[in-house]
Image (cartoon, rainbow, N blue to C red; front, side, top):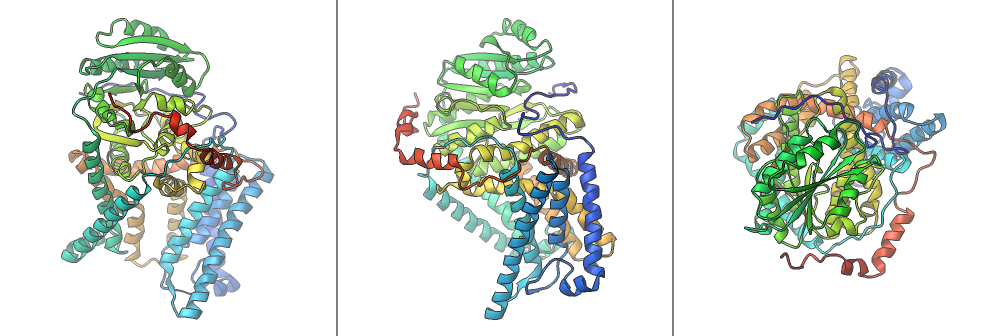
Length: 623
């Protein structure tokens, strides 16, 4: 049964954390894209028309190495045009803008020159030349990496927190990842060789893009195997019965339109749960009737005890910490005030905590249905939380558990100083740090709940700018896990990938524009067989992964939502661009490696195991 939700515009102090970000005028992104288009046309015209440039760069891009073959898009020109356009509209004065543009362009140019010189040396010494297509792809990845790193260095970010990093599971993680990669590789090779006509037909429809079926088959195979491994792990770490007393903390800011449904859904889950349930509802500086309505509703609950508190200082972290102080149980559930949990949520999710190695458990958010973004969000949630999160948990790579519904061991957030304020991503920050302490993070896709989806463009824009900015905020605060010498899969592989992927997403709309400019402007004659390849890079792998996620989670008919999801991905990319424009910049960059707090983190680890002795040990008694 679908719940009826009203369109609601949300905004709070967390929408643009003070000092770190600022509101972005709606015209900034279109103006940036216009400038980018002008620079792209001018650059492509110059390199293909001016004799000197045409002779110097005969491939139509800023390439000086010895390469063979052709390429679809002049990636280096595209990256430099975007860097200049971003610097022109970033939140900074003219000197900061110039500094950002120079930092981006010079660093990227240096990497490209190094790559070209290496290719010349290899060609002369070994008579080996690299494919131009591969070099352009590598140039694009370097551009994404430079962009994300410079935003971290020059952006105003949260202060770094010293971290205790547990590396005891590295061997297990590496062994699992290698086994999954080998098995996925075998599946890709076997499928390609067994029925080549089938693979060729997919290539014709731009699902594989004609650029090597094994590449696109490997990725779905890798995550399918990883997903199955994650489900196996869940069985091993899940007890038949485990029902300790729990607290449910609910922070709320201007949620009068849904607070009654949220509280009654919790009461319904308490009815099915054997332990006692205590609700701690915290009104966070609401200007509507949230507090008064919550007071009336809790008096009518049948199965859960409840108290309603007030936290006058605005900010979700303030409300969360106010509730955390009031928790008296060993476990607590953190639920958004617009989340409707299902009756079996506590009963199923709490069983994992019978294993003392489990520190955080979450589930799969589902949209209420009926909104303009709900069907696209359905696919997005299935892919991210129903597939990737389950698989990454199996190799110690899960970074964050959705804050809409997440369960913690109470001592862990307290040990880590509570939820951080003044930034975006406080829930991801907490999950990541608990994971780095050595505890397992689990997302069970059978723990499903209804989470409100924005009903308007403005509300979706506010939400996604918050979410996408949080990747930088969390990485900056927890930079020790990425830039220190301590090796974990989460810190050295997953978080850097998230940064590069975020940069790719922000630069996706400009990439599409650039491709159209090159093609329609006749700057490059696309071969017919190259067009499917371009589409495959943008859509192919995502289509395959989306279908896989939906089918594995039992949502076969929801495959029909894919067209809306693909359109939504473009909108999401546009919001990512706006989110990056909202980051405040500094005059000078700060070294990510020589940061004083990273040194403090190393000192913390070298000082002994005092913190570990104080923490609840993963091998303790679950009872």
